[in-house]
Image (cartoon, rainbow, N blue to C red; front, side, top):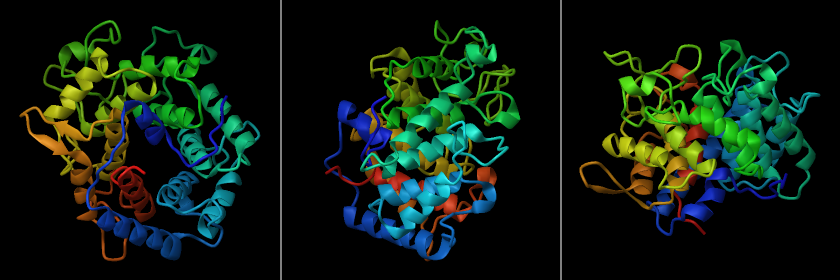
Length: 367
């Protein structure tokens, strides 16, 4: 494995292949908002032990550390160092980064791995990164768990407490592994792509399950496993409804796994997003998971590599401008962000502010 020794994350790394930005939305305003958000996290939210929202485990600390690094704080910044030390204290003998007995070890390790990569400028974290990456592969639903390739769960990752994989956890696993240099041809990535393809409402050889036939719109749902589930509910025909955050997660994952813009799966995902392009809500979910949506959309569109996104009506959008405008308009006076809809922990200011900062990093001009 080629380990990352810089603060380049997967979206930026893959944008080198798909293209990069030379323009963005008012960089001065974005940088001012980022600075205000960073100040909120460091001066008001970080505990003496380096943690953020410690009561919910190490994942929010990992997101905050990554957000600080992506916002320009160097690895030797005191706040980053404290956060990183706290995060590493959760390193387990099996290489994972999670709270003992955690039912969400995949999520915590994936987010933790991305934080380590964001701070690994000198190779000092190589051993921790390699161990965490190998642990993630072991958590994947595959032959090791007795999961046959034909099983809808095959290749996915999930919350242990749910006893089935899902697209949200799988997209974090793919991004984490790609961030630290795992090849798109690595068996774990190829297996994950099979799972991702089965979460798409696209009938055909990549998803032989019954769900796409009942709602063949090209978007993505939450999981095909354990009978299938969409957080957006079902169609009258019994199909699983596609929604915005999972469709961007699916698009991002397919690009990270090496699919090109010409692949039918990528085309179908983009077509769904063209029909539902907006930053006023999480399409299909309203304001639920809105900042997760911003964060995921920014990464996916950056990886797609297009500065303009043309919607289904033919209107062209400079998405970086529109995404940053949506985020900046929601920043509170103290520099934080918070969702009035608290579903999926989006009432947690540390989490939501980290999401916002990470999304804004994709709205700035490329160097």
